[in-house]
Image (tube, rainbow, N blue to C red):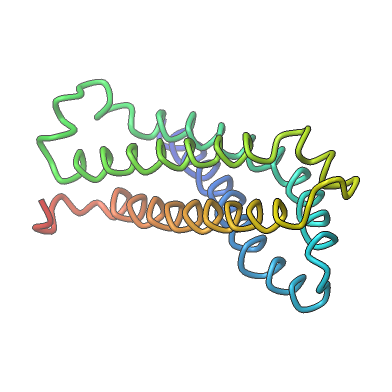
Length: 170
């Protein structure tokens, strides 16, 4: 069972790297680079929409794998919900569940804002500049929140994996 559990944890780490690493790359590497090299906001957003569409398949798949492997990794505590509030590990796990839930919600909002109809309009340059600006602001806010929450989730995962039973936080 130890090898199987380690393999599931390894899969969880790989997919968290894809989720967080991809999000950081898009928001903190690609977007600023495009701002410098592609001054036309319409072209820049069109490009980001195209890249984002490709990444969304990988991101959504990663998020699904993360939820499944996360549930598996926390199965002992989750099988006895009262343990969520009886230990440091439980409090951290509960906090992680909350952050994951908020992250999924923000990701769903992001997908709803950039739905297929909106993407088609953007790619056909059939959207007024004021809409582009508003859309860009929403995407930036959602992206930053998602990355921040994802990094917070990674920190909580590190606490869970550290084997520390209590640090006096709770």
